[in-house]
Length: 112
Length: 508
Image 1 (cartoon, each protein chain N blue to C red):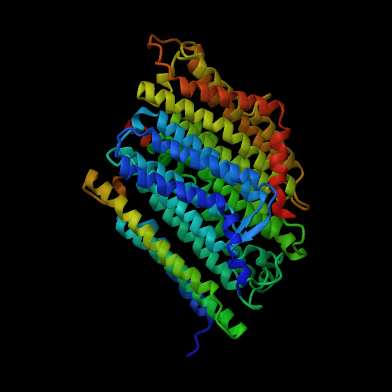
Image 2 (cartoon, rainbow over the protein chains, first blue to last red):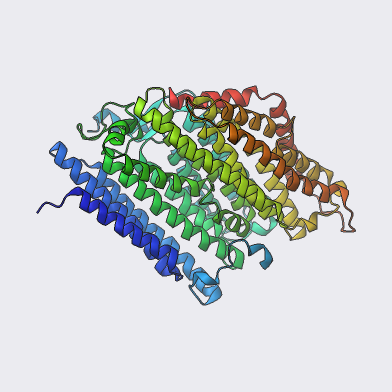
């Protein structure tokens, strides 16, 4: 089975667009964090597609792309950990995880 | 393939500033557990000693060129930003020690997170490898998220952290996706291989292509990748279109953290951005193809710079809170620094480095003033400063100097910096027309005059019967020192100029 690299890149662009759409449209913080994960994973797919393409050209695998992917996976996990911790801190104060409950940008100074 | 000598221990000695900071951070964390003190200035002192040692090592390594483990590059350019970061982090630690409200029992973690963020910036500015750049950026960002929400009981702090993590995550996603596209077309993560400066691919055998080739084969992918990567950097330096998080986060975070974000973190973002665009487009040996592309990138950066400074200044006009005003002012200053980068030549980048150094003195001073007054009065509004000028001259007179310098009026260092940026905009890279940007910079300075001088008016020309604020000697000494340096480097700017010039070994 030989999937062309372009198809993989297009798939990763679609995943990225879905992630971006989720980020912009959804108001639940957990879903927003999931959307960010989706964007990072779209990048991972593109890395692996690129690495496969270059491996085919060079005749052997080159570590750079796959290594980047493992690190991005780790980074995404850490982001999720920190993000969820902050969501919990927020939830304890407001009893909600909706972004609508944040003061809108530009209005924070009135809260004093 | 990695050569065996690359893995030799000599790489470790090149990394000594980073290792010093890592050790310091761990020692602070451990001593926090051992001492269990509520009000521990000793932990802060350990942090300061570590930062001082790292700074000394950086100064003594000035002029050294080398690569540790094939990833971390040691050069004057990185050295400039690392020195900047350690000096700024040191001031932030001093701010935490001076701030009455910050003295609480989790203080060890506070210092630890500040030091971790500094380590992240060290790696971010000191590498040609996009993998390490992303990791350093993430380390700095993750520590900053927690710092922004450090007072999790406070509504504003919790909200600030939430907004920061959401937009930070978005920018990380955007940037990593951009890098993945760039990797797909070039087959390498090393900026020098992309630029063609390093003919030999350090890890693979002949699969890497330079950016010039990639531009020929798939210009659309390269353009998309560049825009996405610029978006990621734009978050870190709080420039348009990713600047809208900055005022809220800066305002909600504890003031020492705001200082860190506005000074150290922003400079780190600029370091990485300048290295990226500098190596790929400005270096002398880029081909014709890339040189033509360079001007398009320069134009995009110029538009971003103009939008950033205008939006920042216009929004700052309306603010009633000093902290929020300084936040918008710091957005506007990101736009000023970008002018030098947009010029896309060595002189422009030197001007940006010079302006960042100037920004260090005047902005740290202004934030120190804010910290003092919000500590004394418990408020951050301009109202609360009414008539304070004559009552605490050791604090307010330096503030006037910082504000004058931020506006860009001679003889302060801010003026010298702006002059350099104007020159940079007048003489950009071949084929790039940035005269309009110079005009924009001038107009923006006039706009900013209004809101900076409003603070001076409130301080000195208005009256109130508020009591004389309680003096705080260390802060007064710090502010006077910063004010002195702001004037001194405005008049005798050659040392800063030399520092900026030596920092540009990146492009040779």
